[in-house]
Image (cartoon, rainbow, N blue to C red):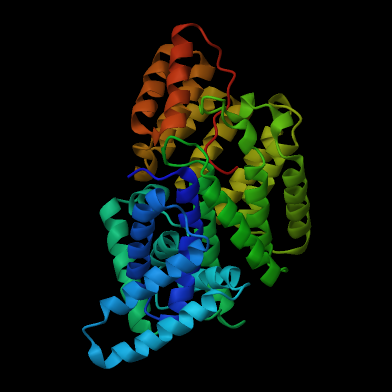
Length: 421
């Protein structure tokens, strides 16, 4: 059954709030998530025909709590205690003001030290707090779907065995979990800003949630430069969303966007944040990415973009946090400063990284640089290859349109986007 988009958005918004409340009261992460999934299924089945309840969150908590107790009905010695807890849970659900705290606490629980690797923390948090399914997480992390599924299962079991409590970490514990939390928020935002699959380029529920949670973190850690840098990066990237698609949903590349549609307020806030934190805090990768985004956003036109400064920033970013997308973005900056042939040479070296060798964005960048260099026949081949490989419908439309323009003599005056920059 296909859900109304408003109902789907509501369920995505409620899921981490309800899960956080369940875990806070029952403590069994795995069982609570199972109960939540059954409640989500019940809502998806009943709400389209019966209507959304007056108190949808209370409805979800009621159903999930019942499912949780039903799962343990065979344990008769514990049933009476569990029913009492469920009753207490329902009374507390009516109290205002706990949703934000529960969601943030759930975020830190997913980054508990019992999950000994960052990938485990990232995948569990994307699943529990971000609401991404296993396939979406796999694409975000450039990993096989089966690997992600195994990580999620193992992570939930580790949380259960560790006996981790549903509380915010102490000031002593906070730093060791913060890196994982920031990485998770970055990936959630990235998936929302440029969805890896589906009919829409932008999944506003993910970007909005990532920005909201990062604001909560900054309120708690106002002196942390990387938290401020990440929030600045999100704001500076999200500011362009209104200009990134045409009425038919197709992608508009950065160089062709109507900059009057950019959100000047978000850009102002993002620039102020990154300017302040670069002057007062140790430099980290999120701050450098935010600085790159600020250079793009402050340019009055595509032609006014300070590409030499962007290339210097990518050189710095490659030093402090190398990665496949950093490499790919830097290749574009190299081409904009030194010409497409130098960029193509850099791209050939970058493709020795398996994560880039078969990625559709690598083919898209190669097509763009070949187009700039005047080799339109070969560029056409790579645009078509990239279009076949991407799972994003807006990206496919854009890449197909670029191929079509080449067959009719279109100019290489566009500038592709590859996520936050």
